[in-house]
Length: 325
Image 1: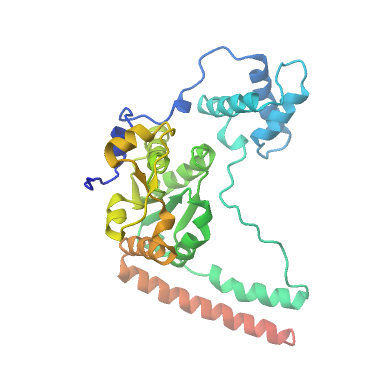
Image 2 (image 1 turned 90 degrees about the vertical axis):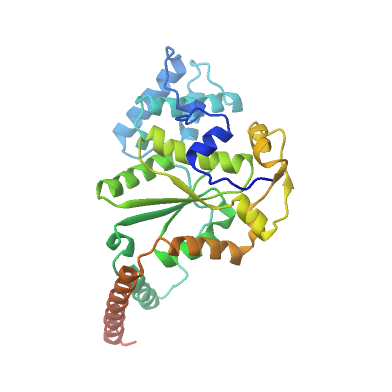
């Protein structure tokens, strides 16, 4: 097995037999005359946002169309999938603003509210936690912006354990349904570029046909659709890591439409990020992030933040004393 593969966007495009600036089949704007249900869907979205400026979900649009019995739109998976594709292409064509449709969820965990019933205890907890929201972003001082992209939702909390410690943004996408989320990220990245920051986009996916193509998709969407001069760097999983740590393989899913291109380069084995184990995975991510840090600036900012946090805690202690605690 060859291991000389750096996972640049150009390499991934060639690996999957894509034109150099290709994004996806969905990226083509609408050209045909709209059907009645399609025109109704667009008008419904625009009027709904005019009444209340909050985004609709595609499912809400679906059920509204189902209720319109004269449109020939039915409550079936077939029609729903047509709607998903149509709404995306309508947004690409500029018929519906991107922010009129609700973005994909990035987390699956749920934290119930409350837990502290006594008001004084709640205030004490809030004051204690305030120290962690005080301070300067060290990446801003370094004139850099770092974000980690992943589709590994089940590993989100383990990755978050690292990214939080280093003030790094972590975004978990839902496979190819990430257009809305990447739209919002593209706006944030554009702001950082306009500020003159160096951009570091890091990706974590499995080493399989879909995992590598998702990596390609994120990069092509940002560079060729949103026209951002960026490169998505692969942190995990690489064939070099597979070989170095002798990770156990799975058999490739030959029915995957992306499998034949993957097999030509890597053979019939695939590997999951999970095979690294929690500690090794976190260590790899941490080392990659640390390699981007200017430690002179980092240490100075951390010291300033520590002093400010101590000030917050002194204020908190004084407030608690005044409360008779």
